Image (cartoon, rainbow, N blue to C red; front, side, top):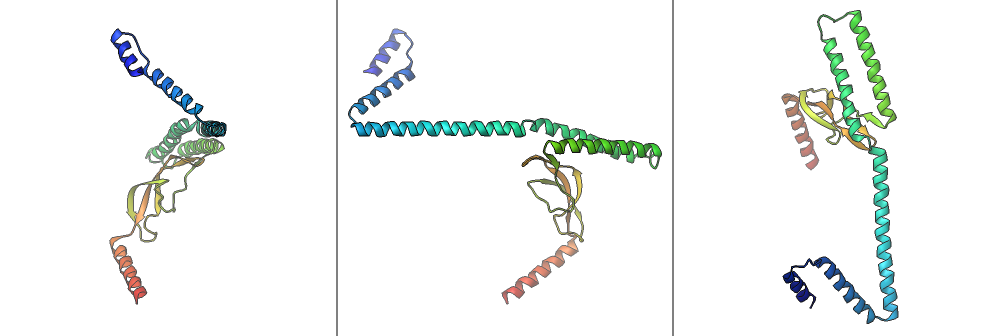
Length: 209
């Protein structure tokens, strides 16, 4: 009947809120169903509705609390990541000056580098006060969650996958990765790799026997 009425109204050119009509139809059906329920069943239905509403409210409260905590803890995440460019530029400036033939081994270079080191130390201190700390890299095992390998160098004195050089320092903000460390890792020379392979094979065969 209602669908026929909607169709008729549309033919007349008037606007019909189909969603409204459907909602009213559902309410009417629910009211009709409630009339046929016993008092105990009605109470049970009401208890279920209250429980669902309470659960929804509790979920919303938890989401709000989490969003509030995240905003407080990580609100400056983007700003902090951009600020790391300042530290990078300081390092580049220092390296560039130290490689300048005209300044090498001069008193002027020593003073400039000392000042740059002081600024760098102060910036790292400020970051630390805001729960931002550099990631340990040198002599650590490569961790894909913290480090990004940019190149490999042959080094038989270290285990394969050991970080031997840090190209760009990585940082953590509390338990979140601000940016990974760009690193260079060790690998065995071909001769050492073959020796290791043979040793592993001998151990494997010995274990089987």
